[in-house]
Length: 115
Image 1 (cartoon, helix red, strand yellow):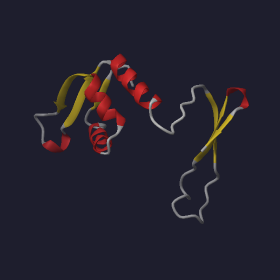
Image 2 (image 1 turned 60 degrees about the vertical axis):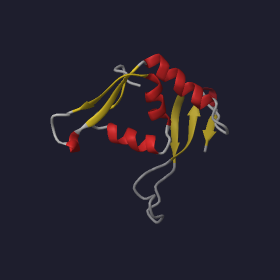
Image 3 (image 1 turned 90 degrees about the vertical axis):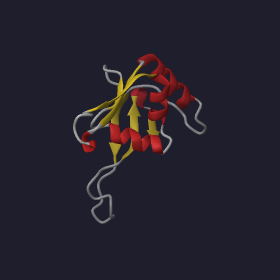
């Protein structure tokens, strides 16, 4: 979370709504930690309205951490990443010719995490 503890806004408001519709964490955490809810650009048309919530940073952090640590089959690994190891793009494989994908991360002390 940024130094301004808010969720939503003109740009991210739609993304937050979509994640919330799929039962994502940020919407539930926003409901839990919200201290002020508003709609930005209310005087303009609905296309530019932006739902925004000011949040209590500590409550938001505690909620997210609690949910992540209690998620089945999720292992949380804390530490610094020194390097992201990516695959080479393959122009012959549809959908993979423009973007590289991360397949592992090198942590301190040369431990590797792979997906």
